[in-house]
Image 1: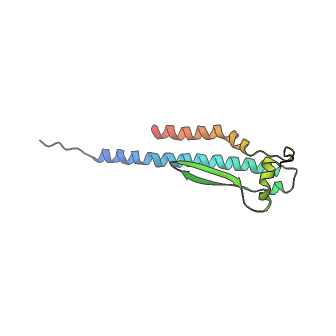
Image 2: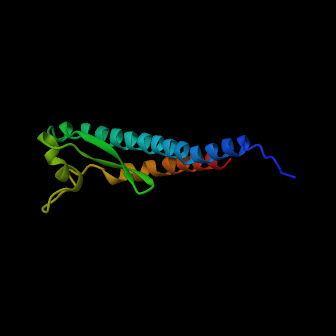
Image 3: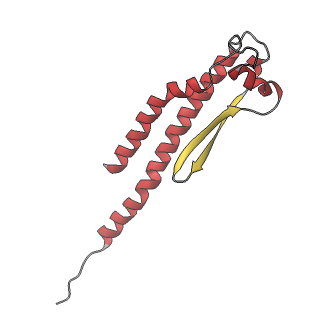
Length: 128
């Protein structure tokens, strides 16, 4: 006697499993993008409050990148113009730098707990 199996449910389940990584990746990418925007905005606000007029003109941007199976954001000053002074604004000079130093990495550190929470939530939703 031949056993008949309705494979439609298995196919639907397989499609759902294939979609989980894509949905999770999209949610993680959205979380990374939101975090990058928050960090970019915080850095931009920091330099806009500078006492130095050229530092107030530094432009910050970000670019999302795929790294293996992950997503990363490269946050950096834009090229050209006042943005060429970013190293001095953020890291100072060999002579002194604390009078002109603005935060850069610190803004990313502030955003990290929220980013970790959003990424964890995306992972939990994928598994449920």
